[in-house]
Length: 342
Image (cartoon, rainbow, N blue to C red):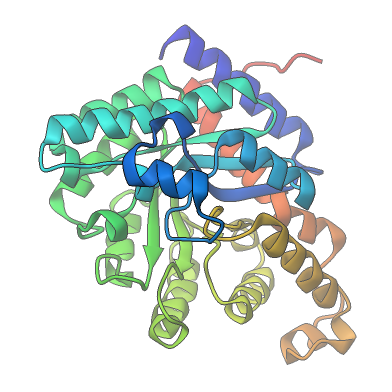
């Protein structure tokens, strides 16, 4: 671990540990270096008033959204729709590494606002380059989480190459994260189960909890399978983003009723720029308001358990859960706990 990475990880861990009881954290956002855009991507970014798939936001854009939505910190990783690939693995590796470097630099500029997450692609970069990139992301950049997107990058979530890269991430102490949605056939429930059972004592992060870009009817089966799978494997943690709101509410009720440790395993998020932070966190806050007023809730499980959602429980879902999750990952990378400065 490089000295600079260790120092950044220690600062982040202390921030998260000290403020876990008050932080609101968006656990899934994507930012892009505006200087990396060229050609048609740059023209669309600069001139189009309309939303389009892959519309980019910079780190500074994201902070503006966070400030407007009352969000203190955000997990940031690259936007795969804005990272250019060719058929050449060296080029792909350089392109993806540059996108990861922007994440590192943004987190260094705004250490009190961002939790950096890396991104790896064993298909586009090849296995050996992907393994080397993991070493860079964790040991040099100090990323406590490294993400795969089997859907966007078109490979099976539990393919042999993925498993080899996951093994390296776990060996280094970082958390492997996955886009886990019903939008493609690449992330089935049995694939996530395979990953959870491969390292049952190590945390695994599944972003979207079965949602993603699928239509609501198509996603229904995976929504239900994801909910069940997380209760069967306590190392699975889920990010609630890009998923139908009624199902997210049912997830929250189910996991709150399940108690420890499961009520610590769900994290609220927006998937910005694909989702608006203000819309999502405004919705989460309103939803939690109805859940705390359990006597008048439409779900009989909530009515039957008075006080199921306390202010402390709500704060955990809005940020405390992820703060502790990420702090534990940081401590795992450091190998030993150091006292935080007063």
